[in-house]
Length: 631
Image 1 (cartoon, rainbow, N blue to C red):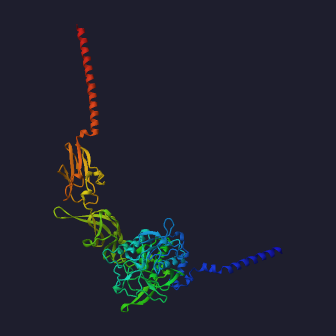
Image 2: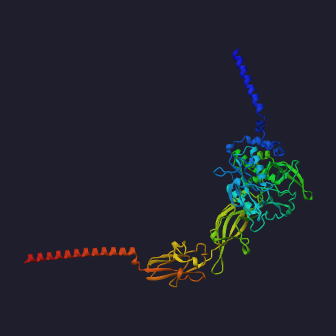
Image 3: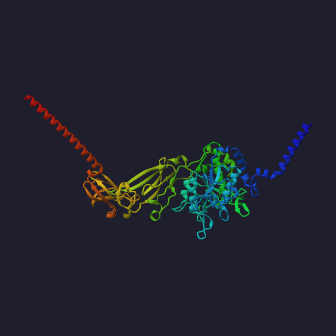
């Protein structure tokens, strides 16, 4: 009986504890089941259903996270406030585990805490905040990281941060994104072509944007916002750039009523939620806010690109890269919405959803490829001016590497298998002495990309060649590496082995010996045009021509070895080489060997004489003995 009472008492106690826990913890349980940001639950946002986010949650929860590699989303914007709670655990870290980003204003990678979004609208914070919230909702903090890039400008007078994005800083940011291996790059900015948008369209001889984009686009999925003016891209003046650039995946804005509320048209690729999007802010008393615009739709598509790569890894397949992701995303078998444009044209615009993204069989989707119709070269080199306005121009003393990319037309619509057949060469034309021309070519490699550090001085061309069927397409980029000027004060005659030394340290005197060859050269000629003839003189008499001078003296005495570069004056007394020429027999080694030889010879002679004398005496004694015997 007592055992029964004890068991009942224990059961009542356990029941009481369970009730107490449930009463005490209702709020903590609710937080566990539904994430809140400020006072808003993500699942209550209108686009949760539009994106079919619930399906994504279920699918991602079943993935083996240990099979996934880190994916980096670079956000080029006005910076972020890294102290905001939304960014906890989702920022890219360096090898020391410190959250870092890139300040394109200074060209340096810095602590994420130094990239504060100091603009009034907190645009960069809001864009990166969308991605951060999506990362956390799917529990991907360990595999998807945000790399913030600060690319806005400063007021030239006050130094204050402005809302305006600087195109040179964007080019720097794209290059840095490529260097760190960013999988996705988001650009939520730009202009209509009619509103000073030409520079964002890649126009201008020395525009760094096209080269930076096309150098990164093979490896990185580049996403850009379509802008908010409500313009039809059928009118070329109304295309929004850089979203309208070939190869960039461009995103229109969709509102909660399934209406397009941004620029639209065939130039752009897809629509994503861009109305009442909840994201990070960072003002006093307001950590979050609702924001409208294509700027908010773009990071949703950027996140989708990273998610697509993760899907492939989770399925044990090779993950698509850059342009391949864009190709897959453009061929999403997604639902469409109708939108009426200019001249009553009705567009059927695809709308992003995560279920299609995570289930469509892209590998068996048929892509329509077009035959190549042309080729052009884009690069990140610096162009000259005047006659060299379209020529990559550098000084021989400050040569820097240049990244070239072959852009095939129609861009992004040719068969990727032909990319590797693009051939890169150097083509240099020189005039012959008889007035003709000689064309020299040097093979540099194959593929769409060429990273080249100029080693050939003078003027020449980098040429990209595509052979397709019976057609040959060529693109040519002129290069000029200016030689250093020939300066007498930096040039002197010295031993060839000392030519890299300065005028002050290179030997200017020495002992030479007849029958021994010594090679001479000029100092200060490393970056000077060596195709200009160098004439060599000994005591004013011409003795040879060439970059070096091999001299074998035939007579003894002091001799002056001088030189003349092209039509420049002959080097004067200060910069010549004074040679003290001695007979070869006077060389220390030769003299020592001579002395040894004479000593040996003398010893041999002495021994021979001694032997001869002894033989003679012995012979004489023998003769005397014979004579005595006869008597």
